[in-house]
Amino acid sequence: MPAEKLTAELIGGLWMVIGSVLFFVAIVATVTTYFMRPMQRPHKKIIDTIEYNLEQLNELTLDELDLLKETVDTLIVHVEHLKEKQSRE
Image (tube, rainbow, N blue to C red; front, side):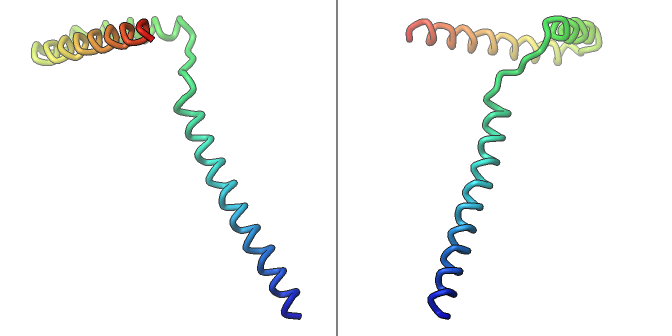
């Protein structure tokens, strides 16, 4: 009897470990796939979004416009830096 109980506990413990590992691997794979996959949008939707946002510029204050300009300038510098780095590799 004790040998059968030991075998059953060993199989049960092994099953718990394998099941837990598979569960967490599935979660990590799902999250990684979601965030690593590039966003795929139709060109028309992107253009419509940009047009809508440009229409909203009329409602911004001068301080908000200055902040937007600084943000866009920083973004442009960052993208240029990434392009230079990519071209060197």
